[in-house]
Image (tube, rainbow, N blue to C red):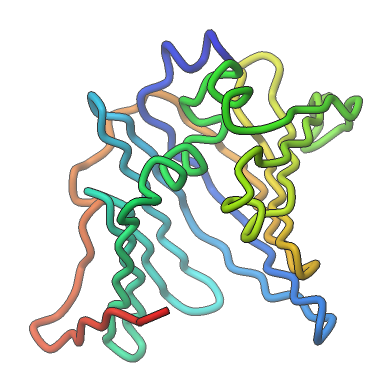
Length: 196
């Protein structure tokens, strides 16, 4: 991961994202493409979900924007004082080094597991920060040992809910068009900043 952190500047991949809600014992699945770029000191991330409904998520300049074309609305969230935590989370494995992980997380090796035909080392990360642990109980990363990047990530919330992201067709250091990090809204799009 340390070697990959020095050489990985952009990543794009297909993603299948399962969101499990423990209270109702239900899983929603979204599919799309994910893009990541480290540009100098700036971290950019975008997800273009195609199924079941179109949805775009963009992180740039300390702000997360979620655009739902069906209702033509963008929800905007400022990372504010949590920007460093958010960016370190977004960079988990995609350009983040193993040494950076050790600063923010207690890391435990859980053996290896085959994912998409790859024998992947499995790491458990527990946030050192109490503030972060209030939102993220632990994270499991499955790392492609040949490239030093995750091929699967699972994030557990204290409630027992979790998000599982599975990556395929991972392309590293390909030129990404700038517009993947910009929302494609209409002239009538409503912008909302939820409170809380």
